[in-house]
Length: 320
Ligand code: TXA
Ligand code: MG
Image (tube, rainbow, N blue to C red; front, side, top):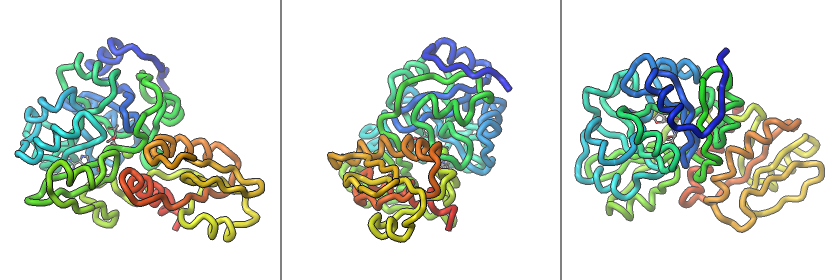
C-alpha cells in the first residue's frame, strides 16, 4: 500500500506524472485516473489500479483541441465538432496515428480524444509535454467518482496523489461520438446530447451503444453499479411492489413520501443538468446506508436526461 495524498498542487502532480506515476484528476464530467499516455509503464499501472480488463481502451486527454492532429486524423466534420464542443464533456473517436501506444487503444486503430473543461486539470495538462490517458477513477464496474473523496474511497492506497478540483459539474461521463460518412454515431450519451450534435453539424445522429457487441468496450452492461440492488421504472409501481423492504428512492423532481424510505429528489426545480450533477454522489451515498433496494425513476428522455437513464439502466442490469 502506498500513501495517497489529496491536494491542489499541480507542480507535484506534474512531477509524479513525468515519473510514470498515476494521478487522479478532476474534470467537469467525472474524476479521471491519469498517466502518461505515451509510456506503457504508466498505462499498465492504470489498468492494474482499476482492475480493468486490457481490452477496454482509454481516452486520451489533451490541453487543447489544436493538439488533436498530433495523435489522430481529423476531417472537416470532426474539426467542426471539436470546435463546437472542446473543451467540454465530449470525446471524439478518430483514426489514430502510430505514436499512440496500442495499449491505450486496446489494439484498435481508433483513438478516443477529449479536452476536459476544468481549470486545474487544464493548467496541469499545460505543464506536460505528453497527453494523459485517463479512464474514470473508480475500480472497474463501480459508479464513477465526482469528488476527490470518492476517488480516495475506491483507489486510496493504490495511487500517490489525487488532485482536488471540487465536485464535477456535469456529473456523468463525456459523450463519445464518431463521424461515419454522413452520420454521427453516438457511442455513449453524456453532456453533449444528440440534439446538440445535429445542431452543430446538420447531420443525423445514430445512437450506437449496444451493450451486446459494444464497439466501445466499456459499454458493457453491468457498469456504474451500486452494491445495493437497483430497480428503475415507474416509481409508484415499484414502491408498491417492494412494500415492506428497506428502500431508498431516487426521483427527478417529484417528492415521494414513503414511510421509512430514504428519498433523494435530484432536482426539485426540474433541472436535468442539476440531476445529472448529483446522480453518482447520490448513488454512492445510498450505497453507504443500510437499505435493501434502490428504486429509481425513469427520467425525461431528452438532453442529458438520456445519459441519466442510460447510467441507471446499466446500474440495474447486473441484478436481472
Ligand atoms: O468523461 C469521461 O470521458 C471520463 C473523464 C475522466 O474524462 N472518462 C471516462 O473514461 O469515462 P472510461 O475509461 O471510464 O470510459 C471510456 C469509454 C469506454 O467505454 C471505452 O470503451 C471507450 O471510452 N473508448 C476509449 N477508447 C476507445 C477506442 N479507441 N475505441 C472505442 N472505444 C473507446
Ligand atoms: Mg468508466
